[in-house]
Image (cartoon, rainbow, N blue to C red; front, side, top):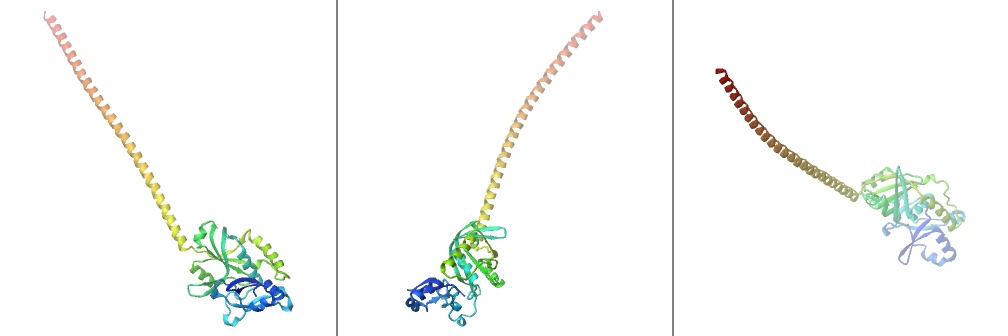
Length: 314
């Protein structure tokens, strides 16, 4: 059951809902009869679009009307082709958000949405066709590293009745594509019982206002893109280079300091040697003076002894 589809008119696809069709059937029956066979699924790529038909709600309950695939047998039972209203409702909510405040674990990431594509078709490395509930493309985030880390793309899966299977998770990890899962099953008060488009829009406004604050998700695939890995490696090399530069500056400063210390030591040695020369000269002078004194003393003693001996002979 789907409440939205694409109408091919004048060579272009236009997004419509059940309220548009109900209006045309009542007020523009000729327009409706002319274009009712040109309704397709909301896939972005033309080659992925599947023809659909409008189905009026049972017991003429117009609010329960929906679009269904024209030939389910020709497309097979593939991912994303049948869903509950609540599942489709939250896909539409996510596609309308301009900013995603994601909370997973202890991390909070703010994504500024460039484009939100519902039912984006992705082909795995094994050429398996996978449908993404809402593919978010972005070029700005907080922290900014998530733009490169997730390569500017985030697959949002809405869990209503079935969680994302492990095979799909592995496929997205192999493709290095980020994926989160939003648990819509906890939102018990979402209704699909409306009498007008205005009533449904009020519910959209109410829920989107809540999702604008914070969106709690489980992260299923948290890859590191090659571009991010390359930039991280480059940043690591730059950081290492800066560290080497700092170490080199420290070594140069240390060498300069050692040179200064060595020069000071040489100056001190020079002074010590000069002082040593002065001391040696003083010692030489003292020795000479000492010798002179000895000679004087010896001379005086000799004269004294001579006089003493001369007197004694007399």
